[in-house]
Image (cartoon, rainbow, N blue to C red):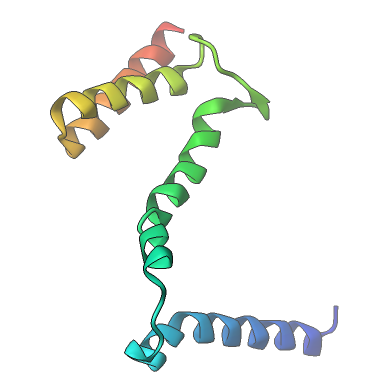
Length: 107
């Protein structure tokens, strides 16, 4: 790849990023999304977080590991149970990490 191709790629990626991120500010309230789209977009952050976390909990060395011997999965289940019982986010992080550490030492 030549230097001009690299700079062209960088410029095009920059333009795409600026256009997609600034479009909401530039267009303002002139663009109205249908209520169904607005409702669906409320779930986007949770879906993105699940897409990041789920593979880490369920995969081990590239293979599906849904067993009680998977410390990440067991700690995730324990942290979820803690959160459902207390609704305390910082406590959930601490409990999940403590459980994960304990399970790694035991297993």
